[in-house]
Length: 582
Image 1 (cartoon, rainbow, N blue to C red):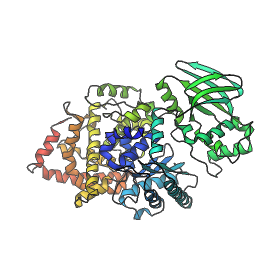
Image 2 (cartoon, rainbow, N blue to C red):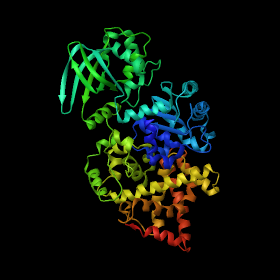
Image 3 (spheres, rainbow, N blue to C red):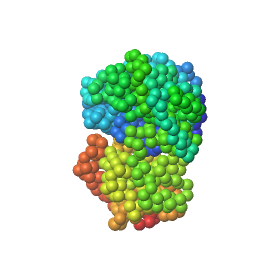
Image 4 (cartoon, rainbow, N blue to C red):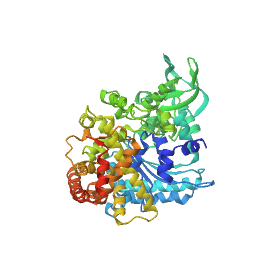
């Protein structure tokens, strides 16, 4: 399989996340996630008591949640074990049904976030994935269908009924399709003669041409049944299904097809279809080669799902696009694929602060910072090994400068909200300071992964267990960054007037900076139990956050005052401080 060769080359995932690497790879491919490392911080559960749930990804911005279980075969198998798929029933039950007080630490924060998003109608789709590197099978599909029904029942009984639930076996075949669609966006390469209605007109640009027309719904109905999801190879969502609810959009589309077919054209926004070639246009048809619906998957899926084939007089407007410029094609796919046409950070990518930071990073060896600019589809496959993701940088800066709640709960808003943005990205923000803060984040992540590994082997002592149980909770990393920043005066033994002035000396590489952070971390980590109250409600309450941080800094300050007169410990603190400029 082509995808697997690419996956094995993703050492940024395989070396750090082990058996969970394939889960993250699948999530990255399907949802076109730019900063998968940042997502992994919160999305992975991966504990001894994770209740059969390896990953819970929640994007309120896109209205999507993914609950996933993974399996990695060490040798060739005919299919993945179906009992691992049925285990997702356990995951769904614990996440949606059990009282929060009974939930283990590993998934409590995930359950809280998921239920909160459902309660406030922030989600329109829950996808349940069983991700593995084996051929897909009917046994697994049957088990997943049972999980889907359990999830629907739990949601209808306890929360918001108006949510689509989709269960997917994400094995070799599906992963290969997702991989191909990320690099070659048009999977359906056949030639089509598409009947047109009411004529049309052509518009030509540099390296692209487009034809605007309308086509009968029968064409979409027939080809949806023939190609299914391959018809949406450039669309990250595919068809999300319909609910028998008045306000469900896809169900509304189906009702229009069935009851008012002649009005469909004026009720619907239409489709955008990219093609490999526009071969011929005449009064009655357009002949194209290749087809991928980049906008209109829900329309097409709803049309294809009606009980009876639409009538001949029903039509929909369509824009066919043939583009020879891959960068423009990626933009067409990107801008048409998302409910929010552009990412929040796109609005800031050209401002003077980000432009200056990109230039400053050019003078730092072995790191790359794009400052809100996205690398396009190709980067999702190849990846820059030295890329510092701008979203993670924004979260790190927000947390370090004493707003961990926004770092965790308002990730996209940091780029949209002028106040949040200007607090961390201003004339005071430098590439060196970003390196200083980002290396702290990496050091904490490394420590968390080490503790996870020891926990799986049952080798944690009591204090390490407390550290582990804190760090695996969602939002804990951002809270710890804020807490350590709050106590930096005690660590350095001086009063820091402006935290933005802190950075490592020029000859300190990113890897060396991560190593340097190990020293202060080893001192403060035994006191993380003081921070637990703040993460129990998902960093929602500012007073609890501030109280927890104050308690933490008081305890660490007392310990530091003792250590500074202790041989060995004093030298460790001084060696860290000696590499800083302030």
